[in-house]
Length: 367
Ligand SMILES: *Cc1c(COP(=O)(O)O)cnc(C)c1O
Image (cartoon, rainbow, N blue to C red; front, top):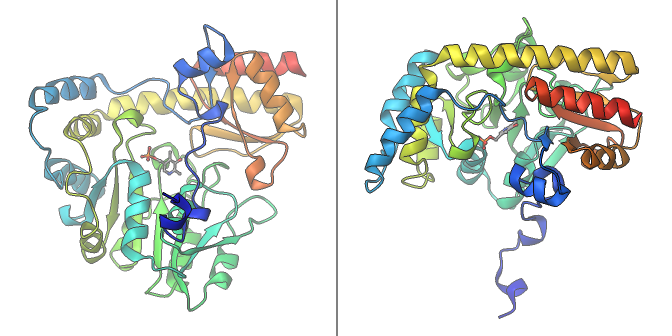
């Protein structure tokens, strides 16, 4: 069989998830680096781990492993709806936020449609566009590495079907202010779907930030995307959700696989929502780690961005491949951003205090 002749036309634009050092799970990292302790600060994971209440609920859910899960996950839908002040049918569960992005792409994108995406943001929007044969249109960032909303408006053509925004933005940690977002949405044509990925929304502490959930009422084209992978620390369980107007959400149900979110994840997510104390502790931990990183970068004269997430963007002025290798030798793994044309920048996750301190010590030794 000649595989090239049977795969879809979009195939050349698709790449498998390449597992470089920074993408390996911690056990594989230990083996690759031949180290007993590895500090993995490349995935923005919550070092605290899930709420004990979630773990208990997930253990209990194991008893029913022979049964199919609830297709829509009504209990969790309802709990999310109540927290967000929306209707249950305005919430759609997904197998991680990643699947939510793909589901939206499968629902709305035809080959040749344009998807407008900021140049420095989460990579899955571009991948989802390619999957559908759509055309990603990248809009350069402003000089301050912020999302250029004016540039995005200018990039809209008659072919534009979707705009993807990440707020707070990964990998910079910067935000689109609520004022900017409100003004922006008014200017977007009604038949352009706006994905607003709020994977880090629980961490956002800028007074100018607001969730975009309130906009779904007057903007039927807005889909807010969230995840339980980050502050709720359920990354391995794979669960996220979307919030949008019920007509938009209903359209996405047409392409959603019947049992896309497993029962263990549903149980864990529901229990997690009911443990807001755990969320607060996670935030406090993040706050402490953030400050340690800021102090270090200031002492070293590195430019960094005040983050609204659980990671810090920093420009070290040193070639990031070199710095990555030297840090890895000391068991510290960070994210380099060369793929975005940022040759001296790193994204460092705010790990546990011990991990952040290990990074700082390694950095100081290298310099
Ligand atoms: C981590 C992340 C996701 C993926 O979340 P999952 O729920 O684990 O699929 C989506 N968007 C952004 C911006 C992220 O950083």
